[in-house]
Structures are given as C-alpha cells and as structure tokens.
Image (cartoon, rainbow, N blue to C red; front, top):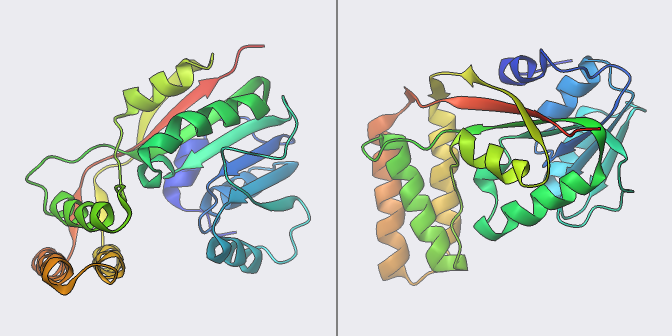
Length: 237
C-alpha cells in the first residue's frame, strides 16, 4: 500500500494496530492508507466532496476494514466516544475559518477516552515567499468569488490550543516535511483554482488575477520551502 513518507512519519509513534480510526477530510486517502497499513481494525474515511469519495473508493476497492462516509465533518453520524485514533492530514489549511472550531468540537465528541489525535499541517510562510504570493492571489480570487479565503495556514501552536480547549493533552510536535517540495504540479493546480474562481468574476477583475497567478507559477516553477508539522494529542481517560 502506497503511504506518503509524511503520513508514515506522523503515525510512526502512534498505537494504531487493532484500533478504530477516522481520517477527517479524506482527500485522496493518504492517511487512510497509513492507518490501514499500520493495522487499524476499522477506518472511517470522511469527506464532503463526491470527487474525493470516488477517488478513495477506487484506491481501496476491496478493503473491508474501510468505511467511507460522505458527510460534513461538523455533523458526523457516529456515536459519542466511538473512535480511538483521529487523523487530520493537511485538512485545516483548506477549511473556512468558521469551520475549524465546530469541526474540532465534533471530532472531540466522537473520540473515546484515551483516544489519540494526529493533526498535520503547514506553517504559515513568510511574506516574501513566492509560493505564499501565489496563495495570496488564490485567496483574493476566492474572497471575491465566494466571500471566503481558500487557504488558511495555522501555526502548530494554534491547532494545539484549538483542541486543547476540548480537553486534549499535548504529546508532541514534530516536523514531518522540511522543506516542503512545492512542485510544478502543485503550482499548476493552485493556478487552476484561481482560474476557477475568476470564471465567476467580471473579466476586468478576474483576468488580472489569472495573469498574476500564471506569472508567479511560471517564474517559480518549483520551490522547496516551509515546513509541514505534526501535532499529536491524547484525550484523557
């Protein structure tokens, strides 16, 4: 099973074997792959995007330990205290600002006493970073199109404090990818996001945003910068 190095590093010191697990924001199922490879008894892969759900089904067609749930992470149809291990791998940076707190509350509700939480995300990048400049254009286009940013980068202490407010106790924080390799493919994908948002805007507003995103992506091509961190916490018994 293909498990990204960053996921393996985040789970390396966690007890997963034989436990009921949940990947919050399944995406392409990278953390799900890590949990299954580590011997999880059952994995709930939760996403609210149909395309992501289809991708996870295709990736794990015959895995009877996996249960795919298409749902909003703020409203999970799971009992209280029913999950032993929760992962959120590169989730919080793509959430609307107003979703982070209720999602943290809902994940805490379904976590059993003694549960483990692993939250992996990216440090905010410095203002002069070319990748951050591209993300700023994406956020500008998203704000104009949908009245909300596309990307928000939290420092590790911010997410630790968010879950600490629900009783989770900090175990460790570590770097799992440093520097982060932002490839040409990553930059192209974010440029495509700008085009998507710009499509709903008047041309005099949307076209300059697309032009600037394309310019930044072309000039940067790829960049190794920033850090992906992993915060592990435990819910007291």
